[in-house]
Image (cartoon, rainbow over all chains, first blue to last red; front, side):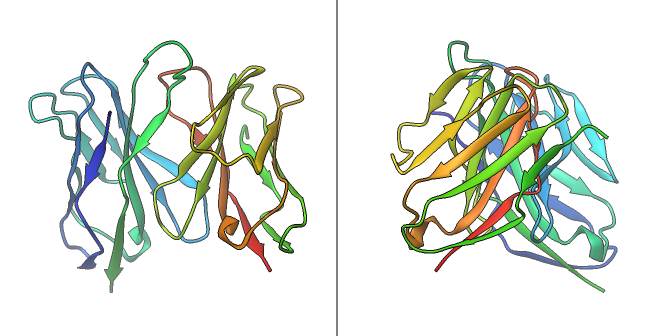
Length: 116
Length: 112
């Protein structure tokens, strides 16, 4: 079945450091790809998305590029802030038809802590 | 603002005492989902509705039920909560298949 794999955490960085969180998927075809962020005690928020190969999603200084050749969607930010401390989930969804209505497959999540 | 609302944000119940969590949406989305999430793990899908069409995940315990009386509202009923059911419960919506999901803030359930 489809799976999404994220780099293991937790990740601890100093403010203004460069961030990369790796994400790879196994789905065949052309899934849509997402990064969600979850701040402590809150629900998930969509951070960015890409729906076709070579698309770049970006938001709040975060970027990720849909790489079909490497089945990857790595999250990057050039300069992290303390307020970026959260859990980050990579996910994909396939239009499989039938009753598989856009079911998300999540990675295991990566805890990011940014220190001043 | 259009949004997904969950009530209550925090729910405390006793072992074996039925509890209902609610979700409402102003997005007019066809699909509504219920997830269970434990301590920073990935959310686990319990079931979802496409309009009134109910879809249960194969490994969702019978203890968990759901109702969707109309497009805007969806309920999660836990008939006899056990200590292992303590978790964050997340509701999400999506306009149709193949789209991103919009999550509510979650309800934190504590079972005493």
